Structure formats: structure tokens, C-alpha cells
Image (tube, rainbow, N blue to C red; front, side, top):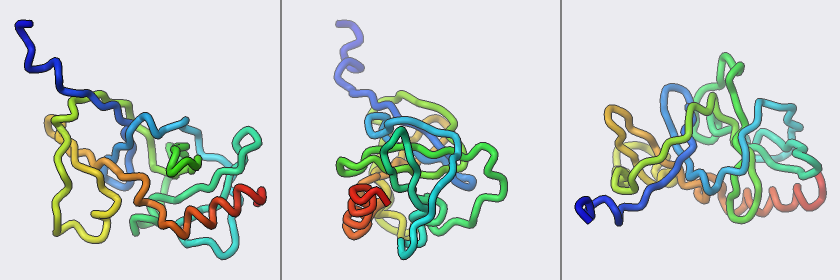
Length: 162
């Protein structure tokens, strides 16, 4: 028990991805898989940031464009773009991102609460900030990315099959 101070610090594993020039992270336990960009079927009358739906092995999955959700400009070069399939409130949802860079494991102690002000309207989406050497990773709170109305409308889409 010489090094007992490190034994009780839980580790977290995150999937790291890029949007614009920023790095974001989501808990690997919520990630189901990462796909190359695929054909997305648009949905009429859906919120502007819901790109549409994809058919993943027979399951209709709604896809959210995270750039649009966060008010970022469209991606110029989508060659490395990916769709991350995540579980949000019991539903599989796709998130379009510029690129998926890595999976990182780090101490939960590296995570700090987000600043309480000064970073605009995105604070609702942020679970915390991870400081890793020179990098700052914004950890997303996936449950906050969708409004409750979005969840209801997406459940209707996936139940009715589009």
C-alpha cells in the first residue's frame, strides 16, 4: 500500500471528437459505435439541427448535426466527418462531428465544473471541462443536447419508421 493515494481515484474513458477548432468528449459508456458519414434522409418540419434519420441495420436512428446545434458554420471538408451513435435517454441517436480523434482514459480528478458564466448559451450542454496537460476538453452532457420536445418527436419518427 505504498501508493494508496491513487487507488481510490476513479478513471473515466471518453471518446474525443472535433467540431471546428474545438475538442469535445463524451463518456464512452454512452457511445454505441462510430460510423463513416452515411446517407441521411431529411425529415420535414424537424428542428434545424436535426439532420434527418439513418437506417442502421434496420433501426431508424435520428441524426443531430452538432455544428448546427451549437451554432457553428457548416463544415467545408466533410472527408473525415463521422456519425457517433450514442444513447440518450434510452434512445439511440446519431451525432455528426468533424472527426473522431481518439479514446482517452484519465482520472476523474482531471474534470472540473464548467465556468458558470461567460461562455454563452452552450453551458447547458457542458458537463465539465477536462484539463489534460496543454489540452482542454469540453465534456458534453448528452441529455441536454435534446429538448424534451425533440425526444418526443424523435420517438414518433422511430416508432412510425419515418
